[in-house]
Length: 433
Image 1 (tube, rainbow, N blue to C red):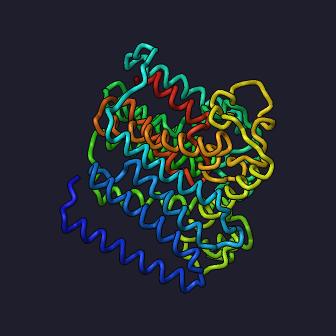
Image 2 (cartoon, rainbow, N blue to C red):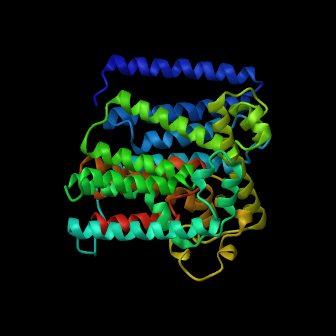
Image 3 (tube, rainbow, N blue to C red):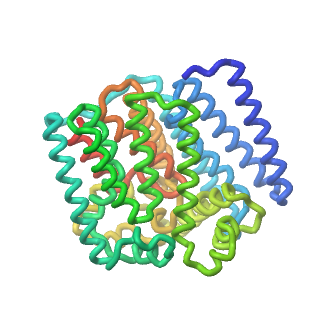
């Protein structure tokens, strides 16, 4: 995709117009200059990253455009929209700046170096053996799904609109085998690869994907659905270019689905039935400004998380708490028979408190972690993207999808070191590469 100069000028002009509108809008809310200036700076960085990377790669979906969402939310978090937000301490504000800077630097360095791939010590599987392996984990996922539904006592999808279902799902004790259920979010992309290799027929791919979709729908997890969406989108676009208008339409449909699922999760509340979705969420999130639905979500699922991250960092510094790499080693530690609560105290957990991805590197190695790990996140995600656009193998479809997911979820918590992400990498490496 080549952007003509006059179109680029129009895009920049449109961005500037929107920037001015937003600054005037938020100033009318009573936001102080100390809030507006950092918001404007992060806003310009996000837009600059997006424009630069789209022009450079000719691809809308790339590490920098996805990361620009995090950068924008980081800037938005300086606006005190909710009573749950706080002014940032200097250390946390510096962490935000360094995290963004070194993620971008890592990506830029990767752009200037040759793409690489880690050596595969397992001999590549034939397509039929690969299919047999994926069907094995697929059946394992069905088995775990049946066990968890039996433990719950009913099918969640048959109780749509009942908020108690979501509470029951959160309180339902699950084992590490639950990862076989979550795996259904990327299995359709792997089945699609085998369909394109003519190992599966189209109706078989559809049937398997429908079962996967049914399983993940029962858990009302928007995170899982986001990963499903990214993996299928990346798998399809690997073989066929998606028109720009259709891509925007898909994105809009996913935003609507995200909002609808949020409404279904809380629609049993009498208060929620009497209020609009936006009013209900503003009340729930202690939002005091006249936000629209998008700004409400940005506050509730973004800005508030940065305040939680600020609290975690402040508490860790006060208690002189350093984790010495246990968060980075989570994929290995998770499978060990040890007390996880002792290693990951909830008081400092960005996963429990939803404190954005930037907290874990700081807890592990302080400023060294902020610099080095963010550099690696940017470097490795760009390397995966380069392998994907160069079509160096179908393996990079799922690998790049997982990086997209981790980057996209940066405003929530650090998924780079989650066990289920590492588990998906392993399954993908065995089955596809």
